[in-house]
Image 1 (cartoon, rainbow, N blue to C red):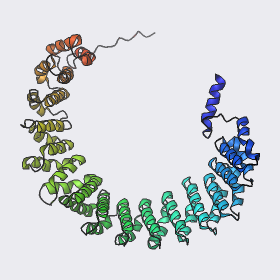
Image 2 (image 1 turned 120 degrees about the horizontal axis):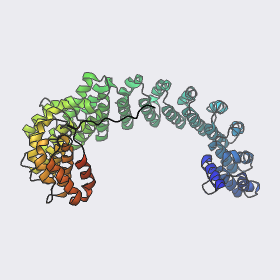
Image 3 (image 1 turned 120 degrees about the vertical axis):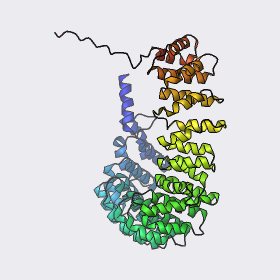
Image 4 (image 1 turned 60 degrees about the vertical axis):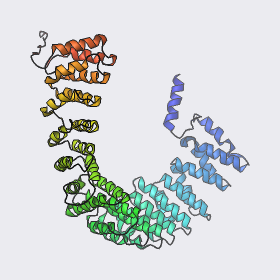
Length: 519
C-alpha cells in the first residue's frame, strides 16, 4: 500500500506523465524501443510515446532522435523537447536555424521559443532576418513567447519587424507587441496606421488601444474617417479603451451622422467608456446628454445608447435626471430602467416626481427608488403600498427592502398591510416588521402565526415574533412558539424552539463568572 501511494504521488508530480502508465525508467526504455525500427512510422510513433513520458527520463532518447533520417521523426522529437523545456535541446536547435530546409529552421524557432533562455533569445533575434518569411514569422512568435515569460528586451528586437516586406510577418509582430503590452511599441505601431495591408492597420489600431498610451489619440481620431469600416470601428474602440476625453466631440459628431448600426453602437459604447473616465468633466457630461437624447429614437439606437449609459455607470445619472426633469429629450421608461440599475440617490427627487406624472409604469419607478437606498425615498414608496393595484403594492413592498434600515416610520403602514388581500404583501409586511422589531405588531403577528393561516405567512410571522421577542418578551407569543414545537409547521420547529428560549435583551442582568481561587 505504501509503495502504491508513493507511485501515485510521483505520477501526480510529474505532470507530463500519461494517465495510463507510470513513468519508471524501464517503461521509457520500452517506449523508446522502436526508435531503431526500419519503419519510419514506427519511429514516429515511438517519439510520440516518449513525448508523453517524463522529460527527465525521455530526454536522452529524444535528443538521439534529432539525428533521425526522417524529417517527421526529427520534428516530433524537437517539439517534444520544446514542450518539456529541455535546455539540452538548445544547441542542436541553434544549429537547425542554419539548415537549408526552411521547415527545419521554422521548427527550430518554435522549439527555442518554448524553451527560452539567453542563448535561445539571441539565436531567434538573428533569425528575424531569415530569408524565408515563414521562418521570420515563427521567430517573431517565438520571441513573443519568451517576452511573455518576463524578458522585456525582446520588444526592442521585434519592433523592426514592423517594417518587414511581408504583411504576415508585420501582422504577427503587431500581435506579439500587443500581447507584451510594452508602451515602447506605441509610436512604432502608430506608424503602421498607413500600412498597405488593411489587416495590419486594424491590428495596430487595436493594439495601441490595449497598450494604454494616449499619445496615439490624435492619429486614432483621424482614422475615424477612414474608408475601411473595420479600421474606423477599431479606432473608435481604441479611443474608448484609452478614455480619450479629447475625442468626445469627434465621436459625438459621428454619432449624429448617417452611419451604420454597428458603427453607431461602437461609437455610443466608446462614449460611455470615456464618460466613466475620471476627469471627463463637462465634455463627458455633454456626451451623456447626447446618449440620453438618443433614447428617443428607434429601437436599435435606443439599445446602443442604453448599453453605453450602462458602461458609463454613475456618470450617466445627471443626464438621466435632466431628462426626467424635462430639460432634455429622451425616453422616460428607458431612463427609469437605467436609474434602477445605477442606484444613485441623486435621482430620488426626479423619480419621486415621476410617480406623480404617471408616464412610466409605477413598478419600474418604485424599483428605481428602492435602488437608491436613500432614506428620502421611503415616504413616497410607502405611499404606494396601499394602491388598489396588487402588482403596484407588491412592487412597493419589494422596493421597501433596501430603504427600511431601522426607520420606524414604516411600522404603522406595515401593520396595516398584515391585512392586505394579497398574500405576498402580507408575507413581506410580516418579514419587515420583524426586521424593524415593531413591538406593536405582536398581537397581529401572533394571530397570523397560528393554525389556519397559509404556511409561508405563518413562517414569516414566527420569524418576526422571534426578532421582536429579543426586544420585548411577550407571553402570548412565547406560548404560541411553544405550541409550534408541539404541532406547528415541521420546518420551523427548531427555529421556534430557539425563539421561545431566547433571553430578552433588557431586564436580564449578566451573571458574573466565578473564578477559581488562585493557587
